[in-house]
Amino acid sequence: MSGSAKNDMRTPFAKVQHLGSAKSGTRDHSRQRLTALAIAPLAIFFLVSIVALSGADYETARRYLANPLVSILLLALIGAAIVHMRIGMQIVIEDYVISEGLKHFTLIANTFFSYAVGLACVYAALKIGFGS
View 1 (cartoon, one colour):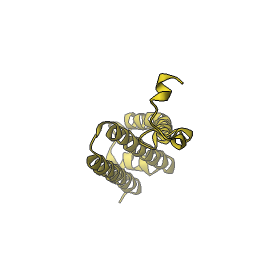
View 2 (cartoon, one colour):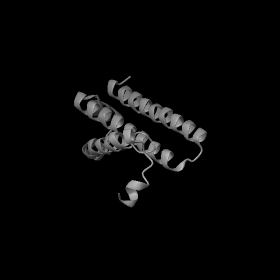
View 3 (cartoon, one colour):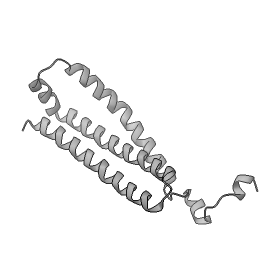
View 4 (cartoon, helix red, strand yellow):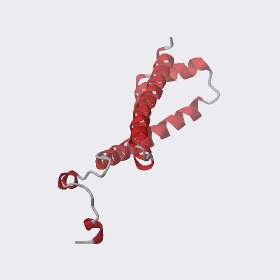
């Protein structure tokens, strides 16, 4: 048995599920990589859109965002970025917050903050896209 295998504190069931001490490591790692993969082309699209709209008036930008394809891509970027942000902060909190009570509170706060920011972004995108 190697030195690292001897010091493994996980239960046999956790080893089979590939879970670390936080109980969700592999799943969170995969989800964060998947959201990063989705964000890359969506961010490029977003940056190209910003450059294309630079100097345009509000009505031109609103008409552009009202395009269903543009709106869907923008909402996909918002969704992927919010999930990516939440998972990233969750990993930092789980790794560096020692106190269990504070860790639990900050994980809940992280989730609420992430979804509040996401809802605000979705609201703004829809409000501009629908022109109201």
